[in-house]
Amino acid sequence: MDTLINRLDSRDTDFTARLDRLLSWEGVSDAEVQHRVTDILARVKQEGDAALVEFSNRFDRLNVSSMAELVIGAERLAQAYADLPADQREALAVAAERVRVYHEHQKPESWSFKDEHGSLLGQKVTPLDRAGIYVPGGKAAYPSSVLMNAIPAHVAGVREIIMVVPTPDGVVNELVLAAAHLAGIDRVFTIGGAQAVAALAYGTETVPRVDKIVGPGNIYVATAKRAVFGQVGIDMIAGPSEILVVSDGVTDPDWLAMDLFSQAEHDEDAQAILIGWDDEHLAAVEASIERLAPTMERAEIILTSLRERGALIRVSGPEQALELTNRIAPEHLELSVANPEEWVEGVRHAGAIFMGSHTSEALGDYCAGPNHVLPTSGTARFSSPLGVYDFQKRSSLIQCSPEGASVLGRTASVLARGESLTAHARSAENRILD
View 1: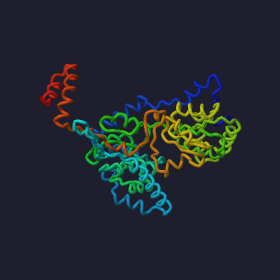
View 2: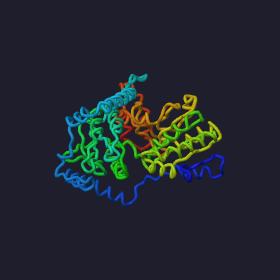
View 3: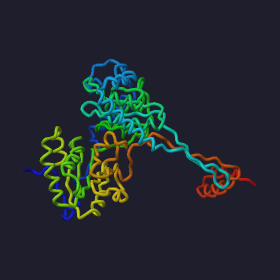
View 4: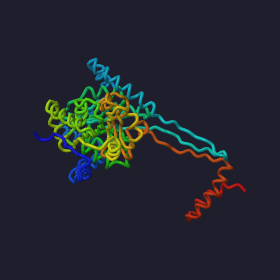
């Protein structure tokens, strides 16, 4: 039987090179995608609603004549929630409340203090006026993404939250609409792709321009978000889903195999890696993978992901496992070890850390509370999960007393004249007390 997942050993001379190849991910759009996106952005910017209707008919195989047919109002969202089966309605409500409670703890406060001269210095926190949430449609319709993107915006105090979601062939996902109702979304437009990003960035006759666009999408969406950045804010350019599991050999191998599958089933480019130092345990996990993978509903996707980008990595022990974890900087990190709290301090780079054998990554995707929009492709080295802070701005506050303006004026004058900026210097000098 062919190996279903790559095996790497840190003792091998080619280990570093093999690991680098495994981790390598080039998410840059090719020239053709760039050209198409550029054209779509320009058309929407120039033609507004007319371009949105044309692109929706062409790409989503619709037959609409105006934007009025692509708008879903608050009453329809509420009805979708009311019509859900009881178990789905309850599960969605529980998840939404847990996400809200968690993000309430993230809210920063404005602050100020006075220095020794009586001058006030501080920071004012202000929510964005309007945020745009992109939600994938069709087969990749995720109500959990609605909650994770919209609820932090709502908690942050954003005045208006707009959602766009494509409906290929006119198919509407009721669970997505219900989630939008729970998350406090004001309006939904059933548009997608680069044209939806353009509408949010530039505004049209019907779609209001937003201050920031968040949410996952395909290569066209990612390319469009990159292109409009600066015109509006964006959350991140996300790569494929990732999971890194560190196991000390205690957790059931079947559990670990399924944890790896939980990310591999997203798509063929997803990455699932397990690190361990017990040879028998690694062999048992591999046996579980081989036995369970063919039974999965998305077996073909899982098997491709594991063969192309998955790995079981043998290291010398916990110290090397931690070193490798920080080298990989994973989106999701499962510390499937006996005392995970002892490991956390040493983890410098990870989007989300799942501690202990009973904490599967899947819980974080849906209902644990922390956000599941996380940095991928090693960007956890410098990025953080989506949160309330992504929907707020910080303004500096400066109010000088007469004495403070005089004291600071002398310092500013010296520095300004050193830079040959005379107007700066004289502006500060005007306020120096005799």
